[in-house]
Image (cartoon, rainbow, N blue to C red; front, side, top):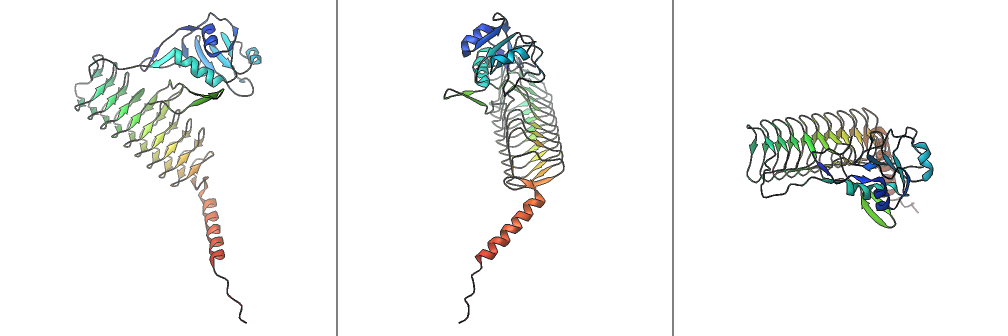
Amino acid sequence: MGADPRFFERLGPLKASDIAALIGSDLIGDGDVAVLDVATPDEARQGDLMFLAGKTPPQTPPKAGIAIVPDASWADFLPHCQAVLVHRVTRAGFAKAAARLLASRFHDGPDFIHESATIADSARLAPGVIIGPDAEIGEGARIESGAIIGPGVVIGARTRIGVRANVQCAIIGANCEISAGAVVGEAGFGLAYENGEVFTLPHLGRVIIEDEATLGANATVDRGMLKDTRIGKGARIDNLCHIAHNVDVGPYAVMAAFAGISGSTVIGAGAQFGGRVGVADHLKIGEGARLAADAAVMKDVPAGETWAGSPAQPIQSFMRETAWLRRSVSRKSKPERKKEE
């Protein structure tokens, strides 16, 4: 799946040789092939640019596309690619190239509500609402003062968008609540480093919020990098939570305030997070798992288990360690009795 044209405009095409010159890479293959879009390796089609990283070539090679790889020897393992670009830091090369291929759509002109937006007759819009081109507002939806609905965004039936919420690059289902000040669909925090410079990776995915989900005041949900960030049906996200790019939150998961979920983490259905829980990236939180307040999760949590602590661990282990520590401190704090002379 390439970048959704509802949210991103194509600046290309560019030739593979043009990209090689832009990022300073060696070219193997057809330099005249047109590069049109970006994709992940498992979804790449003809004309899609991707990057591969790691110490060895992938066991399942891409079926098409133009690949940026870290070593020329990888080309022998990519028989279906139209061209191969050799660049030592593939993520940085991809960041520079993608910025020349795609850009976020922009709402310009004097009108707060773009003429191409589709707004249901029963939808209610408060003063000061901004709605971008090709956005869709469903039946009975309510958009409150100062809210911004970006180009191409879809708001489902009877969904409420709170005061000064900002929704970009998102498809939101029916009967959802997006509270005041929430930010949905901004770029996440993905970086690449090369020769002392820092490059921001493009975020060309979307946010999908399924029916009946709620997002609290001033919460943020980043759009995906190349895939989607998803909030499952009926999930409840409290005020001031942060959901990073590519996170998948399962149906009816619950998060108390200040929870922070790092990129590409998968959260199972019905998981429960206490306040100020922090989760590292690329983890799996199983269905029905429970994380106590202030837990700092650094590894996968099995389904149905309760974890606590920093770093987080099963609650039984955490309680034993806490009890041992309390006894140890208590013994050391008692003053020694002087021997009677």
